[in-house]
Image (cartoon, rainbow, N blue to C red; front, side):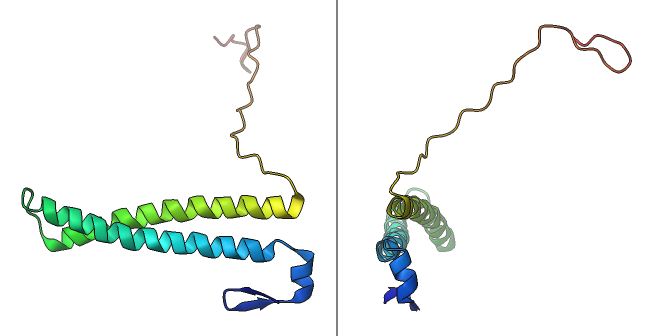
Length: 125
């Protein structure tokens, strides 16, 4: 039986998806890394701002707000990055193929050489 958080997954489903336990472990690691980034980021930014507060005095609530907001953005970015890697791992384990994450080029439209006419018979430039 595979555990996904507090939920237990049926053996038949776990047998159908052999990479489920690896994916669950990867996701757990990604969330823990994001949580750690938030905690360490908040503490370090708060400390840096305390040192800088001698030159730029501003209230404590702004110090806390800046630390928390910046750490939240960093934590979100790290968690999203790690979750994307877990999704790629899941696709690899299920299909045996590495997903292509390269951006697709925009389709090019061909420019016609002849001038176009409007419904009024005028030629468009």
